[in-house]
Image 1: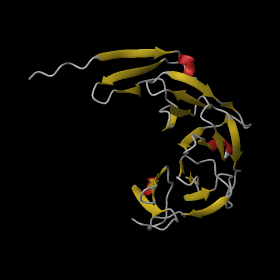
Image 2: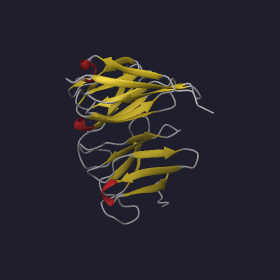
Image 3: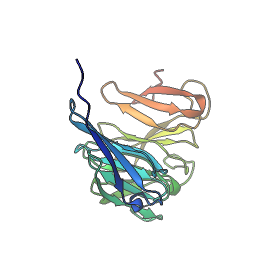
Image 4: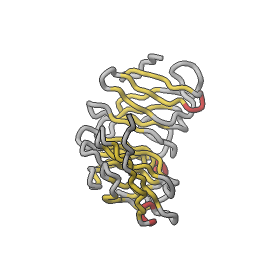
Length: 224
């Protein structure tokens, strides 16, 4: 039996200034009739996009390091809004990188060049920020690429240059931390990202320079 051809949706050209770049951005849309979902694939022009997260509405948020901003799209790939400028004030960024969304659709963004975390509502309203540069407990280097939020609202931040993970409550108070530079179990060497499985209580960390993924429990006990 000959299968019907899937309809093709040509690329949609967006204004080049959306991403703060010179080259235009193309989004390809492919219609899947079985799932009735459309997937937007960024083909070119987004050279400084580093992390993405999805809220409960299905909207997609993207950090753009070159533009020092956050961009929002709906689940069809339509551009909705953006916020952020280069700087050190509230709602300003220097190399925004990691992004995570909690159960209330608050966005947590690692502002790497400012060694801090900024928190926003999903419409871009600034809520709070915390973090300072340093190596003491609760401080950050200028290399904090990864961030995650668990179901209880605790925030986990990866410090790549300090080879450690720090856990905070939603006020920015340090709860715990783990990791030191090395290659033994429980040690890290320039970790990059973090993910949490709330159902199993597992924390997954990409241990980049050791070419592995380490799995911890939510109390930082090494599992694998």
